[in-house]
Length: 369
Image (spheres, rainbow, N blue to C red):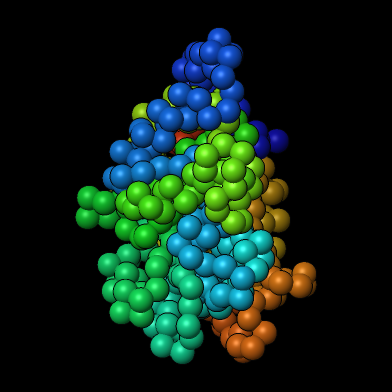
């Protein structure tokens, strides 16, 4: 039986930067400072520069980054926030913590990103605290048009960049467009830590200062609560040091991801499988997702060929059973494209250490279905 091809392989990925990461962890152990020390401070400066923003604030994880970023932009209890329902329940989880309600926007069938015509309709019909734009699967949205629509309505935009580290359009990177942006550094991300981690980047000193207070109980100064809604959400020194070690490698990893994605899009043949277009630097290729008219049959076929797959994501937010996840009950939820994609998307293996031979195996196996 052929050797199994995983969707992702963190063991291979770790070997690439093992020396640099080991040195960074050793540096933290020798420092005696494990939370909010110089590693976090240096990473925040370096990542802000990488993104092209003035400020970066490290937090405990990507979901906290969404929540605290939205709090800093003024979203709160009873408010409404426009978002998509096909990107996992992360934004809706953050909104539940805020006491705010999602107003779901459908997505475009080809890009799988927020449908701009529907966004305009939502902005025209509802009073919103914010818009969360998710760069799903690593594809940077048309932020010029998004911002034009949102600015006309006087609504701030938070970019959800959890899957788009380093994606770039017209010389600007994901995270540099909106009023603020959230990042996750979960180990599987394009820039991943050895555990949970996240960040909020922004061009606003005021927003950054609010997030700094919110990540540490709302203190200003220490032990004195000056900002409501604070929590313990800090990026620790070990994770910050690991991220510093890996950040210089990110652009190279993204290039390899795009190479793999481009081969898939050009070479996979089959009437029952639809591939995304070949994209340029606007695509960080975090995930390579196809659409199939019989996803489970395709998954079974690939499994027999020792090729693993995944589904991102199998249940849309407006279809979740848990209270608080279904969105604004006062607004009818009709998301036909979201529902169609939820039933048909399938993720193929795509990570920087995937070999050319493995890519060929995937292409051949899909084509043989």
